[in-house]
Image (cartoon, rainbow, N blue to C red; front, side):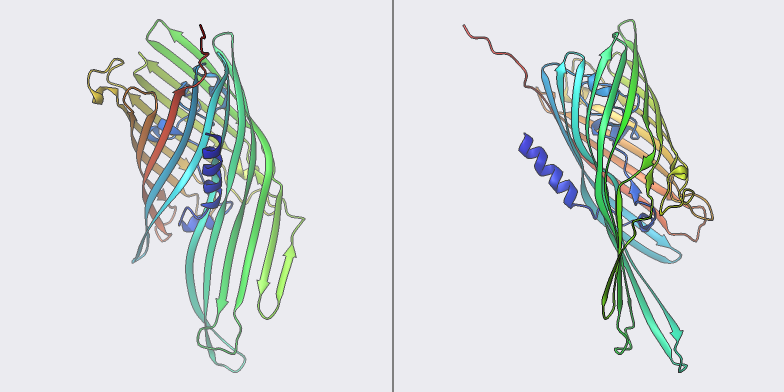
Length: 409
């Protein structure tokens, strides 16, 4: 199993060109939400979710919800169809990606550990522009600019949590953020071979440790009602970043920029969930990310405050299923968020609606989770590029009994 996990990790790291959004050229790229398993079909909630059958890195306090005999291995795939519109221009793109891989193991009855990798940001775009200028002799020169980008930042984590006093769970993640963001451009003069083209690339390489902590308070009301309050906190700080720019014309000029500072935000996540009879789950999350206080290229106000609100529900028809459809978990979710990307006209916003199914494999706890999401980027000006997407997420959660002591006669 360790070999399979490492293989998925390496695949995830190599599959970095996983978005075509033109808005990924700003900041660190498009942010990803670490919503694993069934949470993908519930609007991406997680701060108040607590179940032994799911891995939930959004709140490390959830790791103490374990089955002391079971090992959980989880990985997720996605495919996204995106349509873009700018005035009368239309374009559509399709891409696929491995989103995460993770394991959760019990260390004791109320003590759990999780190890995993997921994408933190993603970068990928390609577009062209053209124009003309007048040289010293009065001749018109037509030029073309081609812009492209690849890369992203991944987050590897090792986390653990313990349940105290039967109600309170405390947990912590040690994170390692790593990756490279590569922005490139080529300036050429297609109708004048005497002028050399100019190629430029800017490479931001990230490698940084940080921590986040979480807590969950669980209260049972008689045998059928349960409520969980959750909170997760990440202190802001500076990332370890190397930034290099290279320009190629007749010669190659490479410059290091050691004096620039790049930061990540203070993050506060609050969540609540209500469970009835272990068959109905209702949840709500609120997230506050102070990107406006995180320096980017040494400037602390070039990014914007980001908030996110998510609602989710899951319904299981029967605890003891007579038919297969009664064992399927049906999920629904909504989310609405601001972008951390700052424009003079105002912030981008995103709205998404998700539907999900939890399909158990017969006679096993292992489940196949399917989520379908429709989302739209809301722009402050109608003249900006309009973007909406359809995304399918597929998650396989292996939940098997491994830790059983054998008896010998």
